[in-house]
Image (cartoon, rainbow, N blue to C red; front, side):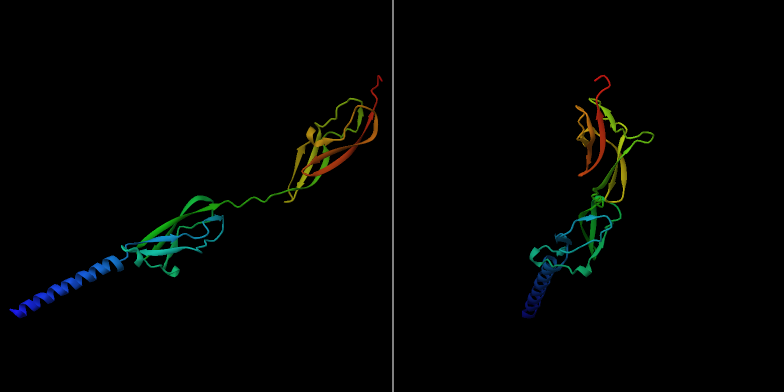
Amino acid sequence: MKKKILISAACVFAALVAAGLFAWYFLCVQVQGIYAETLPLKTSYYVHEELDLTGLCVKEERRISKFNREIDADQLEISGFDSSAASDRQEIFVQYKNFKTSFFVSVNPLPEEQKSVIKIQLQAEEGYELKTEYRCFEPLEIEHMRLLVTYSDSSSELLPVLAEYVSGFDNREPAQHLEVRITYGGFFTKFYVNITLAENE
């Protein structure tokens, strides 16, 4: 009888130990998933930049969080990153064994070079000549004036001359060799005009 009791007690003890081990494994050892505890420091990229995972911390997820363990970076498989074209929201996948998590980054177009004016040159529209002889009170003819603007990226364009670009023109009285300035983009060019009395004066 005592032997049966001892065997029964041993069986109960073994069952309790097995249940305890199972509970310990279930709660403390078995991985339920993975998650990113901290995201990479860099989540915004320009086209053609390489992925930078500095700061990324991925952990195993268990039922008791204090047993969660950080996964070594070389054990993670990263996929989904493509910087060949701009994307407002691109999902990056992180895989560890059979578990996956993800985070998002953006890929921005390359910033355009800020070009600046380096030179301006006044010229007349093709087929016309720059008028330099005026009568008193005759308005300055700017409709056939053109401004050749050269930029820092070596590009150039031909712009019409607007009234707000012009200074120095005063047709209220006769003048010889009157300096007229055209200002654009922080630069100016100049030309000279003569102003004479009207024929009936």
